[in-house]
Image (cartoon, rainbow, N blue to C red; front, side, top):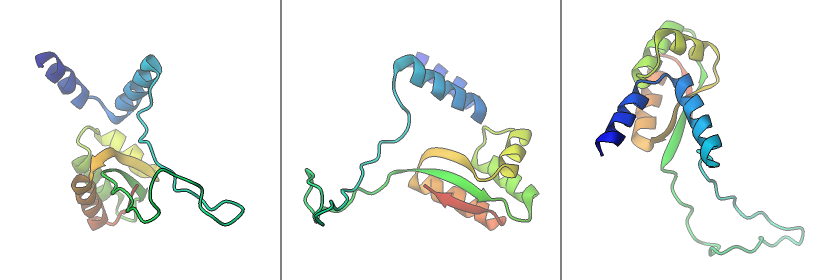
Length: 134
């Protein structure tokens, strides 16, 4: 367990770009994908009926549990948005946050829970940014 905690501590100290490189390397090394798996809704066929599936037609859709926070527009007050981005994603340095804000639309947080995503969205919108949860 101590070994895992040490690895997690090292990962926490990585920049977003380093984390992206790490994920890519892990995907290549182990032949897996870190992308969330989406279940496609069945589309009507040419005859107008829905394609057969293992689910009942009236079954409720599963609620999304992980979200990506995407900065779509920084707005007029970029300095405040940069500060808010660094507050939301504490792994970013000043230059990384500035580059991210200037190159919007960009993902700020990846695969976070609903409350974290909504909190980040609220903070960013409070300083004039436009944010989407995906």
